[in-house]
Image (tube, rainbow, N blue to C red; front, side, top):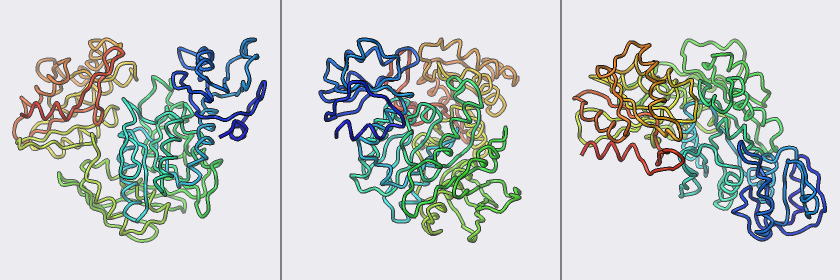
Length: 507
């Protein structure tokens, strides 16, 4: 791959001392530079990647991309490329380096605060049941053919070199569809620029990630980037650009805001059986939903007839996730039989209302719930299936959204019988300070320490305590970590698994 072949992929650029040459790798990490590499200097929050340009050149970089001011030293270099946005440039260069893999796939992007991973899994299963080959990039990992690849600690949307590499591997595996979990940070940081989406899906937009986006409007606008990208995405044969929207997500006008973004077609879903959409559109709606510890059963009304659904997933909120996945199926004209079969095959997603049963007379559930909305939904589900008390173990992550901590404390105080506060990736923040903010919410809910809630900083001990006090018919909910396999204290990631801690405590 030559530099002259890559450069036309950039939306805008200026080049100094141009000299065509072969490119062996595109990277934004100087430590990964090899002879013949193109190095992209990304300006970070604390460090500007431009300061690593000398190191990259010493390691053999033959071209450098930067958005930083060009110094006299830099101007003496060959193939110094100036761009308005280095992150966008990195994404487009990586796509070109891999010969634009997403142009050869039908790509579905799923965004939202809660339910993204479950919806991705359901949509992939629906497409697979229809006979298609499907790859996925989600919070849990990247699935390519029969392989599932680890995407790293606390990773939501991988960086653009990894995304384009995964898509290229999907092409090599003769994959037809790629499903991508599109997070707000991934979108805002341009990690998904140059991914040619065909279907954009929203689950919901609730309180989360304001530590990064600063305002709720910025957070919403980052999610909307997925839908706006449909207008400029590469057009593929017989593939319309379709938006799948949640009519029930009306807080702060989210539904109307997203609906105003143009698409070839909009598929709108509602889990509210009394909802009536005033305008003609492709509208799907759930009614007669039945929820039990065995799962969900409901009827979906569509413009093409009724669809009877049975799912082993627990939690009424999964009705909405299933409807969103059905929206993907309808966007790709999947037959009803395949939709029904695909949904029935998804028995669970790691760390999403995951039931751990080792013969104990009470239920233990591990869930990723780390937002106010998700914790509320998980506790509602626990209450619905409990024949006794609901005991919850949770905390809040350090260096993340501070405002949600008291909110989650109040929700736990209102919906759980016993609450145990513990660590959840405190990072460099004081765990005591984090817990104090959660306690503000617990006290607003009228809960008292040592009677209703307890503080056990060691997460393993907290889980063991919850299981020790559980009685027959109770539900123990372990919230916040879900599928994750590490916990961060300071700047170090330590091996961790809520599932393993539960099993050890049950023994």
